[in-house]
Image (cartoon, rainbow, N blue to C red; front, side):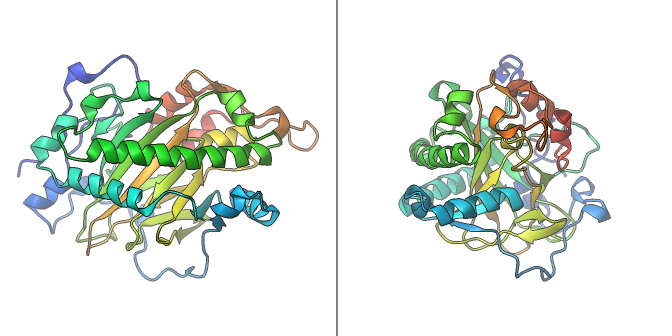
Length: 364
C-alpha cells in the first residue's frame, strides 16, 4: 500500500521561521486504502490511550462565561472569569457577538478544503522550514507516535504575515470565509485581552502596551473516523504556546478533553459558543497565577469531527516574562525567566507535543 505523504517543496521554506516538522502520511488517504486497520505509528502506548467509555466525571463542567455581561463590566462575571483562569485555565464563552452565519461559513470552507482531492490539498503543503500550510507540525522523530488528525495552519494577522501560497485561493469562498472569521475573532480576542489586563493589575490596554500588536494564527483540525478510537489520539496532550486560544468546536461531537486536577474531562460543546484556554505566554506573564492547561483530542468511529483553533500570540521579537504587577518578592517571587517570544516558539516547535514540557524551558 502506497501512503500518500504530504510533501513540501524545499523552495517554499523561507528563512529560519518558527520551526519545521517531518513529513507524515495523510490520515484521510490512509483510510481510503484501508478503513479498518490502524498503522502501528498511530497506536499509542497503553498509558497514553484514551478511555472512550462513559466519563466518570460527567458532572464536572468547564466554566461558562457570558461575554455580554463582561462587556457591561459585570463584577460577578469578572470574578467568574478570574476563577476560571485560576482554577481551570479553560472556559466557554456565550453571547460573544460573532454571528452564527460567520461561524457556519468558516466551518463550510474548512470542510470544503478537506473534501478536495489529495493532489489539490497538497498544493497548500507546508514549506520545508515552515509551519504554515497543509500538513502536521511537532513531528520531530521518525519513531514518535503520530496523531490521528490532518490539519492546516495559516497566519492571519498582521496582514503582512499572511502567505497566500498556502491558501487554497481557487476554492470558492475559502479566502473570504477565513478573512471574515479571523476579523470577528480578533474583536473577541481584543476584549479578552482587555479583561486579562485588568485581572493582572493593569488598565485595559496594559498587555497591548507591553506586547505591541498581537499575532493571530488559525489551525483547522480534521479528525477522521477511526475503527479503534481507544488506541489513538486525535491530538496528543499539550498546552498552547499562545497568549490564549479560541476554539470553534463541532456542535454535535465530543472530542476535546482537558486535564483538570489530574483527570481528563470532556469539554462538552455548547452550540454557538467558543472555548477559550490560557496559553503558555499568559502563564509566564502572570508569573504562574493563570496556568496553561494540558488538553488533547480523541477520535470516534462514527463521524469525522472538525475544530478551528485561533491562536493569539505576542510579536516574535517581544520579550515575555512576569509582569511587574504579578511579582511580589515576599509572597509571589519571580518563577519564570524572560525570553524572546520567537525563541520560546522555536524551542516549542523543536519538540513533540508532550504535556507541559515546554514551559519547563523558562521556569526558574
